[in-house]
Structure formats: structure tokens, C-alpha cells
Image 1: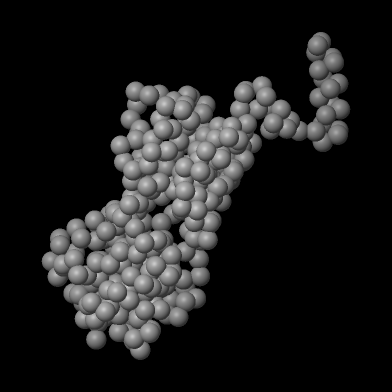
Image 2 (image 1 turned 180 degrees about the vertical axis):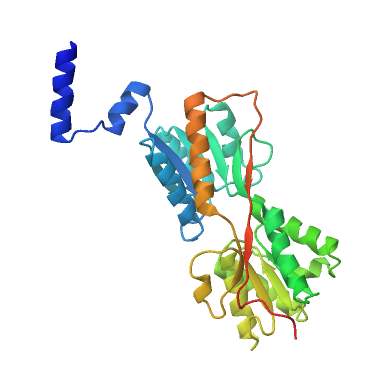
Length: 307
């Protein structure tokens, strides 16, 4: 096509408002221009900012995001997305040991973990610094004068549940706070009802606790319910800290003290890393590069000095 014809085509395209379709671009590059994102619980509000951050970063390169809720079966969700010929995977749903995720090593799929990781796999992860975050909560409570601090943990088959549990044990011991396993109760999922059941069992066993560090905000809301069922007040009788600082915690009664993680940044970082892996190709000789984002503590009314 001669230069004059090219110029006429461009002028007509501009006049008609034409822009190249991502699928057409994908035919040239043998890509679908889509990234799969597996999350463990679509009802958990912490994933909204992560998804928003990822979408905004991907849109700059004309990529779209396909989201799958694993509903307790990450393998099914991953296989469903792979059947759509996605160009890469962002995984927020990952057990510490996962056969399906492990199989991705040999399937030439760019993978980035977000908010958690699977042990022993050569994939990068964008995560919050849970050790530092739990430390902020424990230091805050000890600074208020609490010495009988309990932990309602998340499921320890997930890296977030295990990591926050380990951080709690480490920080209480390093700060000289009284600790034994009777102060730990594990919720079987990061949701309100499992948090309530775990907190009920904890308070039945240790009614003397004055503060609870919950593994996330939804578990903390379950703790609120368990405390109130005993005729006690959150903050006044038992202090509670959450983790993630999901929206509307400032409107709770009482407003919830929580550890804030920059989840929108997490989503953007994960998407940027996936795009870089697609553009540059996977290097099997390079180890995973993990990014830990610095958390902050937002103190509110749910934490006060013990009576």
C-alpha cells in the first residue's frame, strides 16, 4: 500500500472514530488480551480495591480482566480461565500446597500471586507485610496496657492465615506479653460467621482476655457478635483489632481499629508484573521476586485501655 493510500485510510478511520479492536490486535500477537484473576470469596470486600487497581493498570495496555470465584475449588477456577486462553493469571486464591497451581510451572503461563502465595513455586507475589501489620496491632494493644491478648486466626492452610498466626506468636513473645495456645482459636474461613464461632469458643475457654487480634476485618465482626452475646461491650470490655481496613469500618458501632494495606496499589503492581512477564517472556532461571507493601494502623473506638 503506497503512502498516499495509507494516509487516506487513516483520515477516514479518524473521521469515523475507528480504533483498533483488542481482539484484532490479539490475532496479530497470538494473544487474547485477557488476564485471569482467581479470588477465594467474591463477597469479601477487600478484593474490590485489588481488582480495581489491576483493571486500571491493564486497561492502559488494552487488556481485560476475567474474574473467577474459586468457591473452594481453585483448580476448577484456574482450568476454566485457562480454557479461555488467557495470557496470564493473577491468583489471590492459593493454598500453601496446591497441586493445580504447581502444575502451572510447566504450562508456560505467567502467574503472579496477590495477597498470598504458595510455598516452593517460582512465581512472584505482591503481598502486604503481615508480620509488620500484626506487629502494629499487638504493639498498639500493649501500648494501651493490655497483657491478655488473644488471636482469632484465619485458616492456616492459607499463607495469610498461617503468616498472621506466626506473626502474632512472634510479637507477643518478643514484647513479653503472656502467651499460650489457649489464647489462639482458628476460624475455618475469613468470614463473619466462622469468626463468631471461633470467638465464642475462645471466650468460653478464656473469659479473662481483654483484647483480640483478629486475622481480618470480617472475622473481627464475628468477634463483635460473640462479645455482645455475653453482655459485654467492644472496646470498653474487650478491645478488638481487624486487618485489611475494608470500607465502612469507621461507621461500625464502635468504629473498628484495623491494619490498613494499600490493596489498590497491590492490584496495580500485580497487573504491571504480569504485563512485564508477557512482554519479556518467562525466565525459568530467575527466582520469584516478591514485593511486600508496608501496612499502617488506623486506630478507632474498638480499642481502649483495659478496665
